[in-house]
Image (cartoon, rainbow, N blue to C red; front, side, top):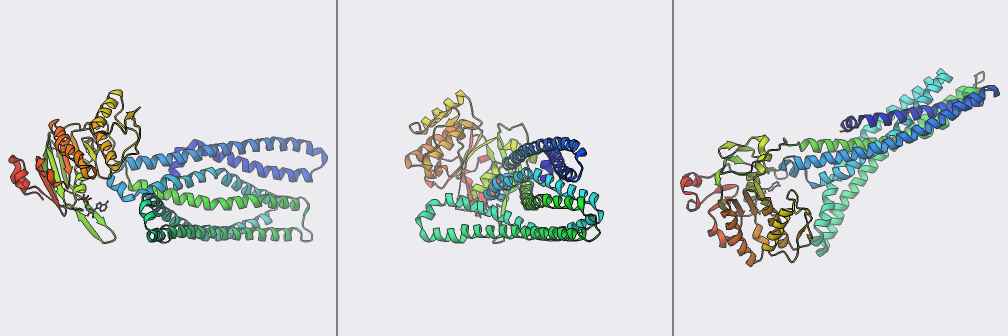
Length: 546
Ligand SMILES: Nc1ncnc2c1ncn2[C@@H]1O[C@H](COP(=O)(O)OP(=O)(O)OP(=O)(O)O)[C@@H](O)[C@H]1O
């Protein structure tokens, strides 16, 4: 993921890297120049001062450029990550998105993307300081090659200790990234479960301490463990540097050693190198966290592969046939599978079909399968005799308008803009007796602060405005008052059917079963149709459903 981001922003990345590297090199050159100025005679100093002024101005300009570029790079990378995650959530198969869960997705959109952005922000620091350290070693080699060899040995020892700690720390950081995803799910529960938690003290305490509290503590623990490893490693690095300084000074102060310029050069370098070395070592944990976050984001987007895009849309049908289609869920904890028994069914234009059955029998799963939210794990869907291919599923879904029981109402009436549509929507709002509460203005609802039953009516308005040939209502009437329930079953549904729309109504309202053209029954994943309601020409086939 990091490599891909770098590829996408290559010129900015290269410009940032180049300006940071040059700034680092110029910084070391300035230190070397200062040492030369200290140790040269008066005559040679005027030219050196000019060089000093030129290098100082160039260095400051390059530092500014690298920081400005890194800021752009950081914001661009965060925007790219967020766009990519959002694109995958919107464009992947519904079952894949469902399998990831909201917590992980939110965590990627927020904290993980921020960590990636922070890495790019700290890039100039890492590179310029690396150059300072590297340049310092080169200058050391020029001053005294034996001391330089000693410095190299110290560097190797320091790096070995660091890489050992790094592997362990990275495991902790990766573990912390996973715990963070769980925490985001629990953050959702704080808000969504606020009523339940406020009404029950014991529940609240248990949730606060054993659920969210323990996740927060575990995350804190793993992050401290990861960071501590890096601090141990940094201390080991610091110790190696001091051992090197001590050794070098001891060697240089030995009787007969040519100390003058070399000693002052080393003293300057040691002092100058320490901070960059510290900054560099401190940047490594951030880079590790960014890598762990980038890996999480990459896995998420891989598991939510984009579906083939298309500009086509199916917009009508006469007959929709399902042959041997099925879908199942695997429940990891209980090692059980819930699966629909392969379904064979034909639905025709204008039919009003009721689907009934007990809780958990598979009605919603069937509805999701029918409208293409779930791509069948086996079997086929045929529109007017033509099998729908995998690449056509998005086109196929454009036949449906749905209101599931966990529907979502967007603030804006998306995809249905225009004055005429707005007027149509407001007429529907009046028809559903909501006009005293809400209206559509400038393409958006004036309010969403409505009761659940009223919000469901608004979802119905949106579905009507979409004007698709197939409607699915999943227990839509469950929240409606008896008067409006009657309006829904006796007026609205027959009206849709009369307009040639096919309607599948999932319902428990047995009082209205008689109004359906056909009645389907779901029982523990098995779909059947009582012979009396099956269409005459295919009743034999329909009674043999499942
Ligand atoms: N997201 C999911 N992940 C795993 N299993 C699921 C999921 N949704 C449903 N199930 C399983 O599928 C079965 C059927 O669920 P479904 O929602 O289709 O039932 P339903 O008939 O619509 O129930 P209800 O009348 O309560 O809405 C359930 O018993 C449950 O075990």
